Length: 69
Image (cartoon, rainbow, N blue to C red):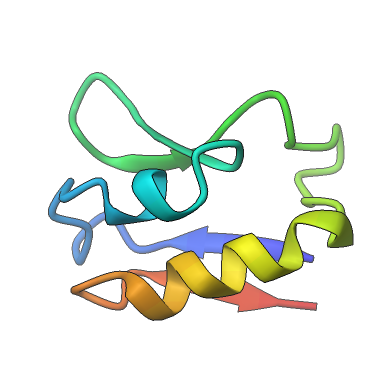
């Protein structure tokens, strides 16, 4: 699965981090990003995190998170 985060849409509310703390974190510019712990070398995220990722994407107030694959 791939996760896209639109930096123009992300307001840094950290809802994704609250809903899926093992997958998302805020960077030093208060923009959401996928944690290094779950990000595979090819840029994908293992399907074992799908439920958390989908919950975070649906909970994002700006709908800045896209999930594909």
